[in-house]
Image (cartoon, helix red, strand yellow):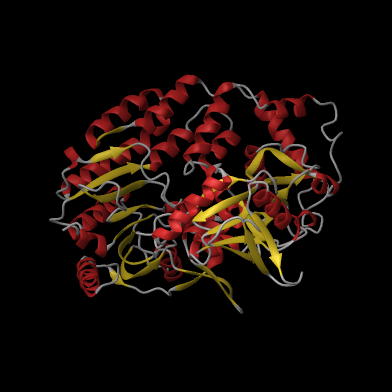
Length: 229
Length: 357
């Protein structure tokens, strides 16, 4: 038996069901609408598990599910060394969103990470603390800024309404997910020219644990044949 | 094993060896306030160490090394000169390589003595080498002070020198800055900004703590930078030459003397290296075969600002170093609230030392 984890709610779930349906595998919720149980048509030995998109990376790495659909951003954020623990089987072409670094439009002197770094150095001298970047993607943002050689910043946690943190003066800049940039602009923010950290989309992943049975490996092959991935 | 009985026995032997050299045996708390480390190293410390929170004391960190608590203790005691040794566990997050230990013992030897920096460098290197005597290890050395002196000696603006010095430990950003300062060109967005009649024409609402005054001040700085001449290609070539040095110490020394003819600013640092090599030879170190790399030590936690060294298993250069050390004068200045004491130190990992036997 292979367990497939799919986001339990909203558009991500519906689009995932459509994606599998278009490839000959029917996924649906079973029982009442409030129940998180699922059913699968078109292949034997595949069990549908509905759970939160944010928990899917962890459950894949732990081996509690064998396959999972979630955002590629969540996998990179939640799993250290992600590509040793899960493998991407197929980008699914929906759920697209960019993780970006954005600063106030009023910072006319800052359009690149190089500018941000220089502004951060001056900010620290002036204000006595490191420039705050609000985000919930701590690992991705920290690794990106380290690679790009940006210093004198600090990450502050923001689990929601991140675009408002600058106006509220709990942060000077943000790193967040955006699809159109509309909310950013409405909040007086702009994206840095080289501020794209990760272009995310819904992706079908498999776990890389070594304890799969031969039957499970064969089942995955069969599924990949049907899906054409 | 990082903390097996054999490791602890070896750690005790090393600590006793250092204590016999006159070092005072000291201890430090496992839980340290995180603020100091975050101020020194920035956000990266969260990726490399275990930061946790205490309901009353705020953020705390499981000590990633002993250097900061040792410096703090020394700056409070005001004893000078002083020598310290310690043996204890440190904790490092390993986010990419599960085979690397996240908890291991370090035995250290730290010298706070400003009388003769060359002699102090040699003393620490020799003490660490003695601790590893008989093991198949290879030493690598460098001197970040030479690179810093070269940057300070560039014929360019103080602003550019400060930007380069700030990124000495981030080779990628350092290279990008050198390239830009040497090209006389600027990114198109910046050129458009400086050409605009009113740079704030398209500015959105003033939000956040960074004020319009600060933005205007940076625009002034950008204008001044745009007006400054590019760094001469000969000077950039000299910095590249220093970074590319990879030879035995005596050969590097003679190459640096040649470079110093065109760049007199590194003269003192080169003389310091000469004195250090003499002091090391006087302690029986085989200086003629000592390896020196111009860019060694630039990717470690950023506090070494002079002599740097590491000892590696001779047949496993890919393994983490068995011992590391270096000079950290700037760290004592930062933690000393106005008071600075020249300091140099090194640590041995007894588990790895046993492993190369």
